[in-house]
Every structure is written in structure tokens, then in C-alpha cells.
Image (cartoon, rainbow, N blue to C red):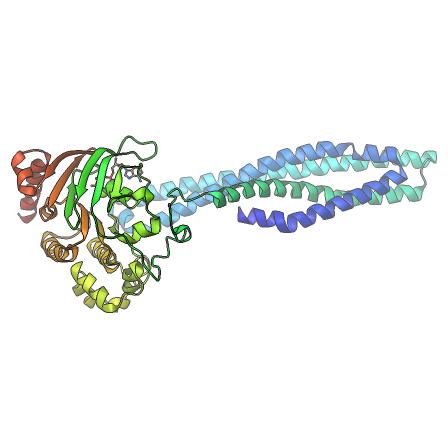
Length: 471
Ligand SMILES: Nc1ncnc2c1ncn2[C@@H]1O[C@H](COP(=O)(O)OP(=O)(O)OP(=O)(O)O)[C@@H](O)[C@H]1O
Ligand SMILES: [Mg+2]
């Protein structure tokens, strides 16, 4: 779109002015020589313009289709290169080759279609403009023979007509460009006009738009307090409710675990608390304030959020951890890493804290990634913590260790911990059990076990799984 806009603003406008002037001048000169002949000569032009427009649309649509297919094709190649181990492991080579073949064929047929259309369009337009020349030669020739026009004037007229051919073609091309440019402009303006949906209220509107820059010189965070969900009902666009009527509190400095089967809505709670999706008003509270009334930057600096899918940037481990606070010294990093159970491993990395991790660096295991993300959240020293299944890829022994250390670090922080590991939930002051977006049980670990509900069932299943794993 930007390219089309540039063509419109630059070359396009110059061409438009240039060709228009040539047109006017040439036609004026022709009218002076012989108005009638000019009229005849121009007769095929409307047809030419109509046909040019029609073909232009067709060519446009076809070349877009070709571009799209090329996109699909390169996505496929990329997917296969990235997923090569999976392709090999599942002996998908033949199927993938076949699929590539099919996409390639589609690309070929679309390209040929485009070439065909162009092959018809150009000669046809040439033919029609040739018709104009033919008319002039015939009628004008007769005029010369009859002595109505001088031979000199006739030659001049023909010269002018030839002059017109190029601007006509250029005009068609420019008009197509203008149309495309205007359409592009509309799309670009649409994007520029889009406001962030999570409008913040109050103090710092500018920094909200620069959420990517993670730390301010003077971090402003909320004071410690409780978290509360009050009759929270939420559905993702076009889906049935992910959460319905969820109410519970995490008291100041306390730790509440949310457990439940896959898809029960655990992650959604954290997403709404950090306003990664917008919760309804009057349903989610942090330190007594509706999160909808908090400036986004303050909210997000106050909550150490560790997402379920930990993401690290392709930078050094030190830079990754410092995202939450780029003033953090190595001592803070080390203590955060220790709490997150990552410190030992950092020592074992080829370049320690300077090891580049992520996509274009050292590949970390899922567990290491999650612990790095956990350490990152701790470095910012936030009063609130939201830990979404952070121990999912950690083995049971390590889990204990981290939980123990976390208990110390969490001390004083209000913590919401989503997990499908009930062993981790044991560490919490209070456990909320979700099922299909509803709170079905809540209580302390022993009480929930005794009551024989969903929690007790999940617990038995996990015990069995662990025994099987050991056997
Ligand atoms: N970004 C999204 N867009 C649409 N639907 C979503 C999105 N994220 C989650 N959902 C849906 O919302 C419901 C709750 O999902 P959620 O991720 O909160 O469950 P969960 O308890 O965290 O599951 P898991 O244990 O697998 O992490 C599911 O039905 C899921 O398909
Ligand atoms: Mg989840």
C-alpha cells in the first residue's frame, strides 16, 4: 500500500499533469487545423478508454491473485524449513512435496492467466488506436485530394495524432495508478486512525502508546493491595463465554491458585487482569480500583505477568531480564534468576548472562524459557504477580524447589497463579477450581480433597499419572 501511495504522490502526479497538458495542447492544435477531422480521429478513443479500464481491472485482480499465491507458496516453504524435524519425524515428506507441487501449479496457472489477459489486452488496444489512424488517413486523404486541406496541414495533423498515442496509454496507466493509490490511501488512513482499544483514563496518555518501551525513568506503580474478580463474564469475539460470573478475591499479599481442566478459562483471567483483552467495567479490580480506570502503563508496570507461552527476544539473557527495568544491576538479575530456579543454568550457558537466546540464539528448553520469563517478571519488583502455568514444563523435583523459592520472593506480593498442576496449588493459601468458565469449587487443598468434587478427581488422576511415570 505504501508503494502504491508513493507511486501516486510522486511519479503519478507528475505524469498526470504532464500528459494532461500534452493532451490539451495537441488537441487544440488539431482543432485549429480541422475540427471535423479531429472529431473523427477521436471517435475510437472513448472505446479505447472503456476497454483499457475493463482490462486494467482484470489485470489488477489477476496480478493480486498471483501475488497472493506467491505469498502462500513462500509461507509453505518457510513452514517446512522451520518444521523440518516434524516433517521428518512424521514421514510427511511425500505429502508435503505433493502439497508444494499443488500450490506451485496453482501459482503457475494464475501467472499464465495473467499473461493471457495481457496478451489479449495490448493487441486489442493497439488495433483500436490503429483504427483512429486509419480513419484520419482515409478522410484526411480525401480532404487533401478535394483540396479542402493542404498537404502540409494534413502531415502536421498526422504528426499531432501520433503525439497523442503515448499520452493516451500513459493516461490509462496513470488513472489505474491513481485509483490504486487512492484505495491504498484509504487503507493506510484507516490504520493511522485506529485508536488503541484499551483507552486509558487519566494521567499518562502518551506513554500508553509506547507500551513496547518497557521502563520509564520514574516507574510509577500501584501500591500493594488485593485483586478481585466480581461477577466477571467474558467472551472472546464470536465465541461462547470463556468466563461466566466468576467472583473471588486474592487478599493483599496472598497467593491464590486457579486450577481446572484445559480450556476452563484460567489464562483468560490473567489476560483480562492485564487488559491484554478488555474486560467489562466493574468486574476486575486491582488494589480496589477498576482496572479499566487505571492508566495502562501503570497497570502493566504494577503486575508481573508471566504468560503461558513464554516469549524471549533474540537478545542476551541480561537484556531479556532487564526488559522490566533497564536500570536493574547484575545483583538484582542474579537474585531474580535464583528465585526462578535459573541461576545454575546461566552459569552453564556458553557466555553466561551475555548468551543470546531465542529465535536467533541459543535455543532454551520450554522450562528454561518459562523460568527466564518468571525471572524477568521478578526483576521489575512488581507488587502483583500473575503466573500462568509457569511450571508446566518443569519436572516435579524442580517444581518443588522453585515453588519454595517463589514462596519467599512472592512474600508480600499479591499473587494469582494459574496451573493445571495441583501440586503447585498446594502451596497457595486458597484454591479456586474453574470448569468451563465457572467457579465450581473453592477452598484450601485439604478441604477440596475431602469434599470429593472436581478437584479431588483431578488430584487422583494426577497421582495416577505420576505413579505411571515413575513405574
Ligand atoms: N485469544 C483467544 N481468542 C478466542 N478464544 C480464545 C482465546 N484465548 C482463549 N480462548 C478460548 O477461551 C476459552 C478459555 O481459554 P483459556 O486459555 O483461558 O483456558 P485455560 O484454562 O488457560 O486452558 P489451558 O489449561 O489449556 O491453558 C477456551 O475455549 C479457548 O478456546
Ligand atoms: Mg491457559
